[in-house]
Length: 313
Image 1 (cartoon, rainbow, N blue to C red):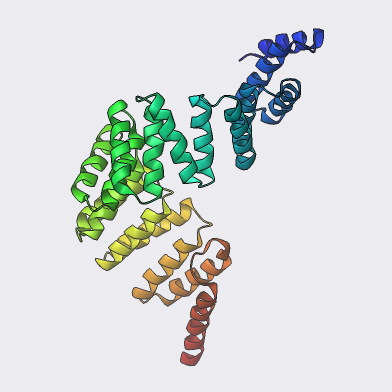
Image 2: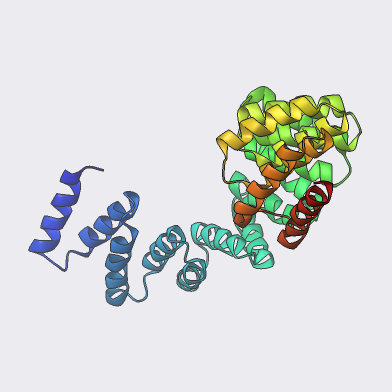
């Protein structure tokens, strides 16, 4: 959308403030370029002129969602649906707003209505699968995600959720099959590597787990959960120098992540490097806003080291 298009719409509105088609198009164009607050003002104006127009409430809902005002978006979508009760676009958008505020039952009812009317709506099958995954109803999740994948075989996200649902339902072989399919199709999909690593770690196949964690981190160096898991597996296998190297690089990349210093401190503790141990605990404390452990326990650990050092003096 060009500035020229906006200018033409503005000129039309200036010439005739009651050119409501121009006002609506202008509001849509504003939202498309991220000017959502200004777009909302224009749609609110139109709502006052046409209080029974479902499409206006629908567009207001879209903008409110973009502004992350989900409860207000739901109110607007609900009003739109009252005015146009068979509109599947409104149902779909309202269901997604419900998902964002974790009102899964309401979202589920709407999506089931959508696929009653359109049995090939891949997005609705996917979101039903997402809902059932979050509700831990994995058999239903598998059913709907499989249908979504059949309708769009290129949909990586459906496959990822499907693999996760299989894993959670205990069907590990199917989970492995889909995670491997994902990385064959998209070698940059780091979450698939991480989930493969998690499965192999649970199966005590630690060499495979380490390999997939290394691939995860190569693909996404900021995946702190993968770094934590890999550090623990390397330490368990007495590969302390590899763990040290991993953590030093991670600290260079993410210097504000306290947990990395804490993990490195405990590598140095194992290596009997007291200076490195204490220094990294103190660094952990200095970054405590990002520390996921107990700060009181951290202080006690530092105090204990200092006391032992003083007693040894």
